[in-house]
Picture (cartoon, rainbow, N blue to C red):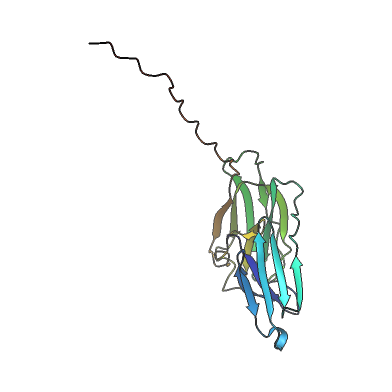
Length: 213
């Protein structure tokens, strides 16, 4: 959670569920070294230069080849929007899994939203990610298992992830072992900073001269 970059090593089959491994999480200014990368005596160094709506990352391979990855442009043309991505890995009974995403709170300019999942039919597989640009604001996500036993672990090893921009908003909570349902909220209103209070006026009028005794 928070502003971190996830370093993932992909297997030969791709970057899907059970085909990749989380190698580390880096914040702005942090780096990670993989000694003897590719089985020889050269090191791979990954450094996170900055993190905003996107991240800027530098990759060095034994100091000989340096490649700076420019920030990825936002997929949303409207600067007041962020992309929500819902990623589902189903269990043995995919049709039992469904989710909803709706607006909560009353952020200024946030349109009403009430999204729901497609019907999942492929068992034990990573599904195509659901992606949509939404207004910056507050949202509530609920995932439900119709049978009440979650997506893990008696009948497969299903799981879910929800990204708001580049942030995994339920990191550490998104295993499929949630019973009948899981509900969580994320996002915040963009509230402009309040101006400093106006100081009280200074009375420049001198006090009256006391009457002679």
